[in-house]
Length: 313
View 1 (cartoon, rainbow, N blue to C red):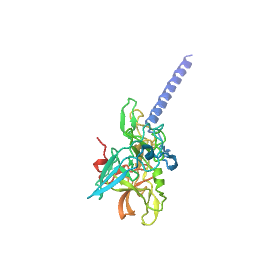
View 2: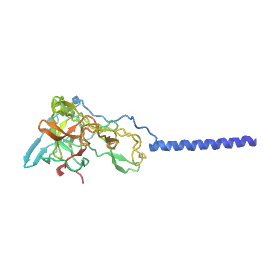
View 3: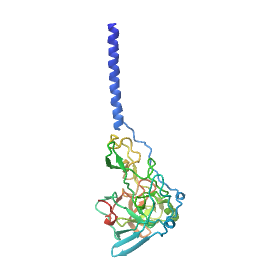
View 4: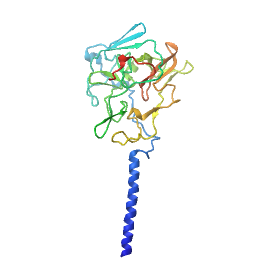
């Protein structure tokens, strides 16, 4: 009987020891250190179907689209009213409760842009304005919210993702509470109306630092062949490292801007989605490119952005 009792005690001890070991493994998995993120699927999504937009917003508002440009000295001044010169989606919608309105804005930039000593993060800026009369603004005002309700601004939620609907239309655009319609990615219906098909470079606007913006087709290094460019960004392959309570955990899947990293040599475009090369206006100049992969719109400035584009506090 004593032998049986001792055996049971030994068994319970070994069982408890195994349970402790298993619990340690669970904690490590929760912390993300044992996750394999080398081949993780992305939630990045971009709408390239121009037919999804059916609303003539100019007619609905009883207004006309405005893009007015004037040059004085080395300053270009652009005035718009936010009314797109192309079809848009229906607003409000299930992911965006706001209604498009006429919003007059004026921006200034240099006509002789130069590269700065370093880049400027585009967060807090309207990063550019297109000839459609609509601005581009890649970043969002949505961030990771901790379990105690604290906003962690180091983790910015991307608009171009399929996990949380932010009410984007076929132009990868939506509306702010002020009624301001703006692009977060490729403006598909606008591009479709320009008949951009890869047979020529097409300038579609200007960035806040004065450099021009083209849609994805550009001259190859030979200055003759046109190719479709993609950015040099890819998903990170290491776990996010957060605890899931104050910062996100798990594998980078594209839900946050911080899930991506720029890889040298992956593209001829730099981290700001820009490059030097031949354009219809110059043999060699710096310009930005709107691509159909992340981030689509430039996330930073290689030159110095004009303060008129800033909404930083």
